[in-house]
Length: 229
Picture 1 (cartoon, rainbow, N blue to C red):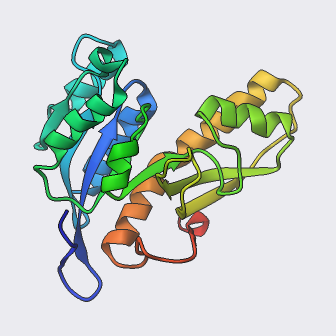
Picture 2 (picture 1 turned 90 degrees about the horizontal axis):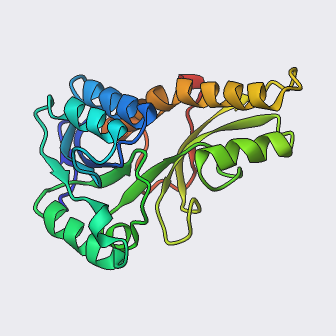
């Protein structure tokens, strides 16, 4: 892993690897946004990894078709063959990504455990909750917010550690939850819409601020980006 390349006192080239299962529109839109912002700020996407090969899922097929149009190395290793030995699968991934120079890995809709990977490389994840909020998958998070009648939620980018969704928060943003409707399904969809509406601009603002040294990976206090979005 290489150290950040300085451009001047405030800018540096941030070298990142992206990992995604590419299953849904959310992951696809995030990678699209990161690719677009990389043309405007000092960021290099060194590789994009997907744990599905073409033909395994319609969502990941669309994802792979999109990223094939980028001038970025693509790594695809199907996880279907490694259901019984996840460590072997991680070793396979490590043997491929170790050929690249990068500062961090960003998980965007990556659905698998990364224990060996995040213990070797700085790895960060986008999670649809505040640092003090619910853990778990996005739908579990939203249901918890509704059941607990939470008035506020948000997004965070946190370091990946062995304990799921519990690593040190790098950045976060918040939004208010509207409880005016009593229809649980409508409330669920409203919260989901708020999350989707913020994901891309939040993750891109985080990368921009990292590349311009406004925040850093060693920072002690999580940065609230709400007012930037």
